[in-house]
Length: 484
Image 1 (tube, one colour):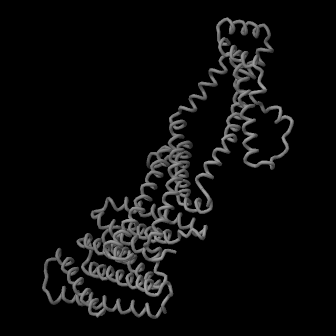
Image 2 (spheres, rainbow, N blue to C red; image 1 turned 90 degrees about the vertical axis):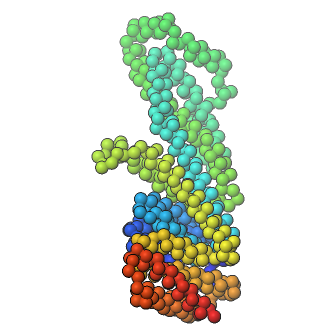
Image 3 (tube, rainbow, N blue to C red; image 1 turned 135 degrees about the vertical axis):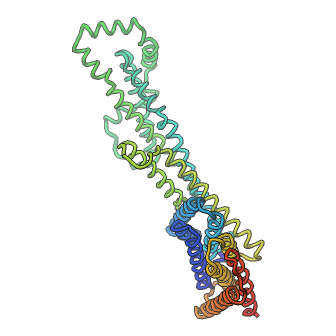
């Protein structure tokens, strides 16, 4: 784990996280976010746990952390997009950011090690998403636009247009399939040397190399391709077949239907797929590097994103194939997979930049690796932005909760700094948490009494703002007195 992970003050850290989650949930619910806000808070917690689980010494936990980072990021992105249509999207976004900052600080800690691991996870997952995106785009360009199916259909129509042409192209496909089968056999030998099954005589006779092809045979095929479609050749062959009806029916069944061509084309395609397997294997080895287990575990989040995106595309394809009647128009598979991959990649990069920004702010502005202070400040800012939509008491409690997050978080980091990972007695942390809670309760009570009874304010729109200012003054005063 990272050096700044509050292992010593784990009770205080988890307490700060619980308070931050409760404050964010309450503020988002009261300000009109609804269930979308709850999804965002849950996503922030999952993201923070995932960052903390990125431990290279434990491969399964590392993979779970990468998946959690991807899932939490997706939940945050979905919540942010859902809250964008609300009246105060900025305040909602800041509250979610506050929860995420506290979750990372409490469950992972802010340090160079943490950000390096998150960067590795995002880079590996992003690479997987980019490869899948390239495959999806290539599939759309070749298959989705109808180019490849049209080219195959056009080729078969041309190859089976006349008996001579069909016979020549059948031989060309046979030669190509034999050459590809030889390449596929050598590819299998390179992947599993000495472990292949004994080759049958039929398979051995079907394999071809360039040295096995006589030059006169190649020259004859070339001449037949060049002059086989000439009018004089077509007429001569047609007359010969017309004179022999049985031979004509055989030629029609074997050559002109294209069944033999399709079978050889399938063999050629499968052999080529096997032949490129060593190149794919070398690419995977180059990607995984000296630690393939860790590399794949770091990229597990990207694999899940790709599986979900391609699964959505497959469902869209099935819906369009069976012409399912839905309330909305069913998009194309590419229209589902490509945007999902692009949005996921952008969301991962955004969360990576956010964590780096929180670390920078904690180190340069707070003076130590204290993400709790940054999260508390964001929670306070979010409360201010949403103050007009909240009841006065909710504003006061949210401000007090932000200060509780700051106090408990700083206390947890202080334990870690002073004790070096040795956990203090739980009673010590509970005593501090109880004292801090008492101070905040008294401060909220004083602010409420002053705001509602001592100062006769009758302007409803200004009541929340004045209450917020009063609670801040009261809480800071009590906190200073307690520390003194």
